[in-house]
Image: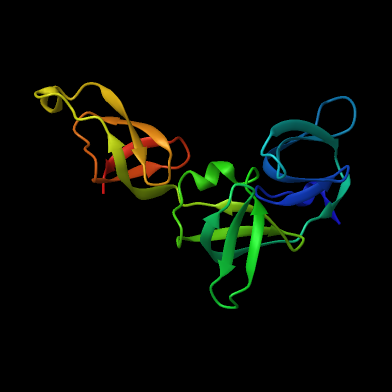
Length: 186
């Protein structure tokens, strides 16, 4: 069991049978009435963020989490398949659960898989990845000098992002996975 005074950002707790990741919290002691804790929680099942208030000293079931390095094998439309590099054990995670992360990883990429109570639940991708541009309209002559404007480009993972006009098909670029923005040429 974990009490509200043992909260740390990043902890996982179970509230009413649902597992949440603690994003931020604040202990509040009003002049009148009992103390309470204001929290911001992310539901691990679907990533929704909610705000919730608890009484000070309230107890919750602490959830065991661990992160393991695994290799992304392929996605078949229903599940995303991963393999543990050491034991060669393969696991499948429903594709809809990790759909956002799959935009940034290619087959045979090493990623961290978050296990909650022994169940694989999330893929943790690095904050920036290098990917190849597989499809991009050619920039018009003179556009690269002006520096303004963007165009859509399709990456090797199938994600479509906005890139500067000078980026061409076949180039490798660095992409911020949190926002989906172009960062630089790789």
